[in-house]
Image (cartoon, rainbow, N blue to C red; front, top):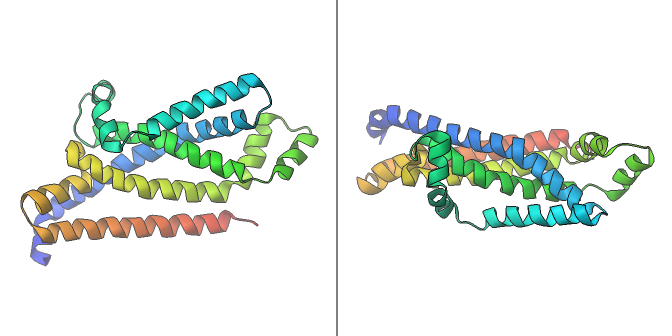
Length: 220
C-alpha cells in the first residue's frame, strides 16, 4: 500500500486541494449569504408586523424548497446556471456553485435556530435600553449565539465535506473523484481505503477545531 500511495501521491494532493477549494467556496458563500439570511428569517418570524411575517414565510418557503432537493439532483438541475457562473459544468469551481447554493439555506436555518436559543430576556433588556435593531443583532444576538454559531458552522463543514465527495462523482474532482476512479473503476481497494481515511481525518480535525473554538467563545 505504501508503494501505491507514493504512486498516486501527486493526484492525491491535487484531489485534496480541489476538495478544500470546493469546501472553502461553499462555506464562504454560506457565511456571507446564509448568515444574513438566517438573521432575516429570525427577525421576520419574531416581528409583529404582518408584512414582516409575510416576508419571513416567503424566505422560509424559498429556503425549504432548495433544501428539499437531494444534492446530486440539485447539481444536475443547476448545470445551465453553473455554466453561466463558472464557464463550465465540470471541475471543482463548477462543483462549488451547487455546493454554495445548497450551503446557503442550510446554514441559514442553523443560524436561525441558534438565534432562537438566545434568551428572550437579553433581547428585551437591550430594547429597553434603546438599542436599535441593528445593534441588537450585532451586539446582542450574534455575541450571545457565537459559540452555537461556530458549532453550526462545524456541522455545516462536515456535512458539505461529504457533499464535495458526491460532487466529485459527477465530474467535480476532489477526493470523491479519486476514490471512484481508482477504488471503483480500477478495483484498487487500497486507494479507496486511503481516501476514506483522509476524509475521516478531515472530519475529526474539523470537529475538534470547531468544538475547541466554541468552548473558548462560550462564556456561560
